[in-house]
Image (cartoon, rainbow over all chains, first blue to last red; front, top):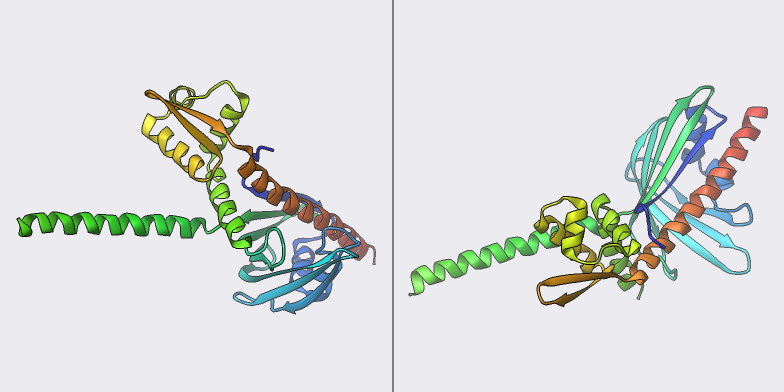
Length: 154
Length: 112
């Protein structure tokens, strides 16, 4: 398949005000009741520290198949409109160890809310670019050094 | 293995994170364009910009380069895109399913 974008995104109009939608992300007991891909897949909240810098750890039980553990840290919490958290699946899993980020935006929409969840693979894109920049810097210094050597040594 | 898979996926997503590069993939997938020159003609970008994008796609294993004389031919390699596709499909399905359940939960709440 050809990816049209590099992220997963879901937009949904919900029959509740932003405060209620926000609470569904902010309270462990509520999270447990919906944050799974299918009703058959159960969620055990292993850790839940809903504050900036706090971590969560969720165990997803796929009946008769496996348990998948996802963990992350809350990066942005702005009630009732915005939540950003990291999302990393633990081994063993096809997608284990991949850094990704979930951004949740909640806006009022009539009597309810519009929810936008965007999940992107952060990659170590930053790291890749930092490394590239690092190497460019090193190469720059090397060429400067060589230029000096040339000046002084000959 | 997971780390290797992760880092190759990072490169793929990095390559896919740019709209021009995604359009270039589509152009190559359509089979209408094959060379760096043809891509340059289609995207009206300076050739060095096209070359830079192609290099990113090549490093991510999304395209394969074959040089014939002065012409650089490019061909899509599907594997890297399929890996990235699987990640997106899985997470898309996860959040669609979760949003369905959230909708049910909130609807129940409003009835009480």
